Amino acid sequence: MSGWLAELIGRKRYFMLSLFVFTLSSLLCGLAPSLPVLLLFRGVQGLAGDGLQPMAQAILNDAFPPEKRAIAFALYGISAVLAPTVGPMLGGWITDSYSWRWIFFITLPVVSLALYLTYRLVEDPPFLKQLKSGGIRVDYMGISMLALGVGSLQVLLDKGQEDDWLGSQFITTLAIIAAVCLTTLVIWEWFRKDPIIDVRMFKSFNFAAANLMMFMMGFMLFSTLVLLPEFLQSLMGYNAGLAGLVLSGGGVVLLVMMPITGQLTSKIQARHLIAAGWLCLAIGLFYSAHQLDLFISFRFAMWLRITQVIGIGFLFVPITAAGYIGVPPEKGNSASGMINFMRNIGGSIGTSVVTTLIVRRSQYHQQILVGHVTPGTPAFRSALRILSSGIAHSGLGATDARNQAIARLYKLVNQQAHVLSYMDTFWILGALCSLMFVLAFFLKKNDPGAGGAVASG
Image (cartoon, rainbow, N blue to C red):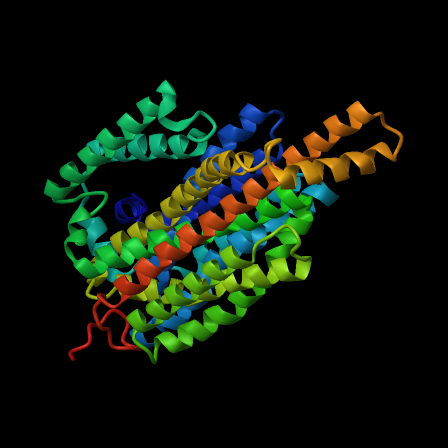
């Protein structure tokens, strides 16, 4: 939808309008007197921010020649990939040290500077000016289906686990609305001459595969971003700031790797870099699943995060480059909008999926472990006797000591069930990355350093 609006009012005007609304809504979020008001302005902020990333990417695609496009995407990728990594650490520190309101206030000078620079430096490309002068029909049906379908999907993903997914009539209704609206949207846009989403671009296997990979990259980035801090906070007693600090090592690695990957993209085929990225990510996730336990140190937790993001550093720029292979310049807005949408929706779905997996697999492992913790189990009787004796020496009576020992053993079982659920989730994510590794070799060859040109060989 952002690409269509850019064609309607001009890319520069749309970008500036998004920045202005984002700045204003950030200010209002920080001043919000209640939670409902905060949620309202947060929604407005998200609506305005939705178009910033695809438009920034489209501007870079048009502003730089093909041989410099990869490094431009790499520098852009630093912010796109690094921000979700640094955000929890910075947000946790601001919340613990000052107030949550400063999370919104801190964005005001940065976005204001971006608004000024856009006004001074950005211009619409010639083909977009010609398209705008030719007139564009408003696709009210497409806009309605997109807003209703994606809106229902987002609420479904946010509230699904809390409301037991399809066990809730509300969630079931949202699922039906999202399925009907998005299916209708695809059919409607397929036959429309000037669609807000050019779904016909997915006839290209390369474009479809690149979007799937960008979806999975968002899925992996945000799901791993949730898993490790949640593990540290819920099972190891870390506060928000300390859990966020664990992510800092991965942020530094991404900061170093993104420009290097941009340089490599101009020398190595994008599909080979993508394959290397998925392989590294799969290895990192399998390693995390094997090494995760309740005795890991802060330093080792930071190392686990680094192993999880090394692969992501090889993915963002090459996948973006692969998505533009064979795409004509006039389709740049549509391509950038779709690629960024897939990354964002992948992040939302990834967060919901891993949260659900943790709960369900934890319940499963708890049932299995409880079957081994019974009065007839010698190991359980021995542990209960030793623990009860130790508690009784602190001054409690025999009955109270036994009850407290049972409670502690039950807590230990729950902790181990949770650890096993995290290990399962990392294994599943690693398996998905392995599938993407295979898919990478089916992408079209590109001419390194020539932007979206397809290799002749």
